[in-house]
Structure formats: structure tokens, C-alpha cells
Amino acid sequence: MTEPVLKVDDLRKEFGGLVAVKDVSFTVGEGEFVGLIGPNGCGKSTTFNCISGLLDQTSGRIEMFGNDISELRPDQIQNLGMTRTFQHTNLWRQMTVIENLMVPPRKQFGSSFTELMRSLLIPSNPAEEERLSKAYDVLDQLEVPHMAHNLTSELSGGQSKLVDIGRSMMGDPKLLLLDEPVAGVAGPLAMKIFNNLRNIVDETGISVLIIEHNMDFILRQGVDRIVVMNEGEVLMQGTPDEVRANKEVIEAYLGAAGTPTEGEE
Ligand SMILES: Nc1ncnc2c1ncn2[C@@H]1O[C@H](COP(=O)(O)OP(=O)(O)O)[C@@H](O)[C@H]1O
Ligand SMILES: [Mg+2]
Image 1 (cartoon, helix red, strand yellow):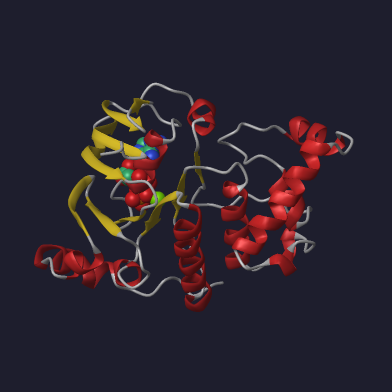
Image 2 (cartoon, rainbow, N blue to C red; image 1 turned 90 degrees about the horizontal axis):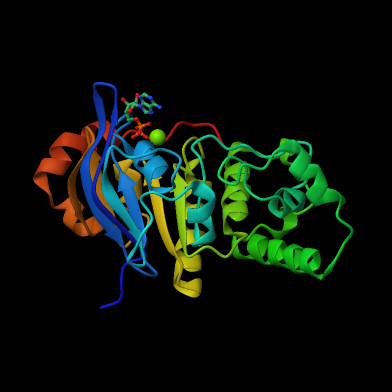
């Protein structure tokens, strides 16, 4: 059997006395679309922060393709093919969509304003043209090529999330971690985003781990598997059908997490 793209083993993160992530274990296979769900505050983003190297875990081990990445820095992890988005989108608002895609993601890459300017001032060269053509391909994959020359300040919340996802796809990642990419996005666009991601996974074979707090919603979005978290722990993992059939999960969540996503788009 091939090694999973991502293997999280007994991951634990404490903030002072608070145990935000309690010995969490799960895997993401190659070409798998996995949802990480659970109510607000249950430790989903903290799990992402540990996996992507932004936070040092208290204990536990994280592997990519069988290699220990537990002690690596975010940029080293990114070089191995993992990219992530953040819960709060941070686009360059005075730049167009295509220009945003040309800039390496902030925070994870640590790109400063100076680095940004330098990258924009480099005279056009083959690598730059390749990147531009990649950016157009990504917009095609997300089915929004018409947005290429829009200023991001003119986009809706949902469209901004799409650009953010597009940016995370620019480096041809093997694994994408998306933190609540459809929170606050209106229903139809949120479904379209999931649908696009499903197609991208099927067509390119990359793996996607996506955080979503609305269980009712994710059960219908075509993910392969769902990891359900509650109060820092993994409550269960399984296919959407298995999650739907799990009485404990339904009792604990469907009531609370089944509320509609916030209305804004
Ligand atoms: N940097 C931090 N310092 C202290 N506490 C934190 C920090 N980040 C998250 N927490 C706490 O850890 C818990 C889990 O948070 P988080 O992972 O953001 O949850 P989720 O993403 O599932 O909503 C929460 O109680 C939150 O307040
Ligand atoms: Mg979160």
C-alpha cells in the first residue's frame, strides 16, 4: 500500500491549561477529498496550524508520504507540496485577480511587501510567463476565467474565497488544506466551490482536506470521507453515509451544526 499523503498521529496541542487538540489521529490518502468538521472552537484550525508548521505541537507526529514533517518550518512543508488557506482571506485588494495569483501566498510563505514589489518588478521572463499561464489555468479549473482582470476589492466574499483557493493551487500542491473556504458564502456559490474542488481532485489526483463547521452542508457535498471533531477530539471518521448513520454524531451535532451558513456572500 502506498503511504498516505498526510498522516496525523496522536496530535496534541495545549495552550497553557487549555487542551485545544487532544491526541487526534487521521490520514488523507492520495486523491482523497476529506472534510474536517466540528463546531466552532473544537480545534480544527489549531490542527491545521500544527500540520502546516505554524504552531509547534505539544506532542504527536505528522507525516507526509511517510516522511516525518513534525519539526519542519512552514516553508519547508510547503516545498514538500502542502499549501493551505486561512479562515480569514487576505487578498491584495488593489490588485487584480490574476495579479493576486502571481504572488506567493502571504503568511505561509512569509512574503513581505518588499518581496511582493520585487516579484512584480522583475522583467517578464519565461518563468514569469509560465506562472501567468498557470494562473489562467487555475482560473479555468475554478470556472472563473472572466474574473482575471477584476480588482479583488470589487469581488464578493465568495468570489474572494475562490481567488484564495486559486492562489493556494498555484504551486501545484499535492495536498491542499482549506480552512472554512465557504463560511459566509451564499449556498449556491458554496456548492459550486465544493463541486469544483471535487472535479479538481478527480482530474488532478491532488488531495484536499477541507474544514467546514456546518455538518448538514458537508454531508451533501461529495467528499470521500469526513473526520468529525468535538472538543479537541476525533469523535468518528467515515464516509458521509457512515457519519449520517452514527447516532452519537447526529445527536451531538446535527442540531447544533446544522444551522445555515451565515447569509453574506
Ligand atoms: N493561539 C492560541 N492561543 C490560545 N488559545 C487558542 C489559540 N488558538 C486557538 N485557541 C483556542 O483553542 C481552541 C480551538 O480553537 P480553534 O482551533 O480555532 O477552533 P476551530 O477552528 O475548530 O473553531 C479554542 O478554545 C480557542 O480559543
Ligand atoms: Mg477555525
